[in-house]
Figure (tube, rainbow, N blue to C red):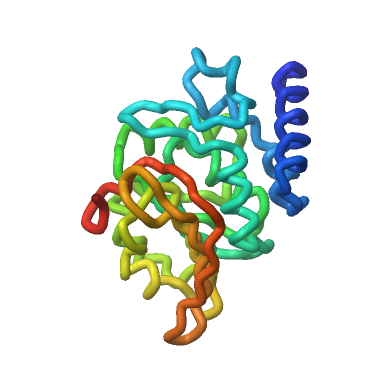
Length: 214
């Protein structure tokens, strides 16, 4: 990573610590994965601000604080098998891949151009334990189920039922649930037929597309 970007990334991580992020695995992964690579070049100068930033097709790369909250809530461990719904430009999936290695993350993206953009970005930093699937992620990815952890990076009216069936017992799912314009971040632990929920605060995400989308 170029020295200037490295310094900006270090400042971002210090900011996240002040905001209450404590999980060293999450903080270290943010330090290791350069965010600017996942943005159009005209946005590199603001790549390490704690802001969501625009991508093609009306999508966004999420705010770093929001990402850190979600990754902490997932309680990621080495060897986990993870499903991500909404690859976008690939930054979040790379953060997860770093933490869970040698585990694997399957990530779905319904917009073909974004899936291709993410593949190019990931090649630049040579992370191997990622599989990008161009598909309707609102239906999950049954082929590789069940998963230890599932993360949704787009807003849903309710968590799509297929995701619960694809989550292992005692697995964790994190998703923003609500309307198109405001959502609550929910952490769900699946225990048999029970879904234990914890609310992590209010956030705003782009809406989920596909069969179970808006």
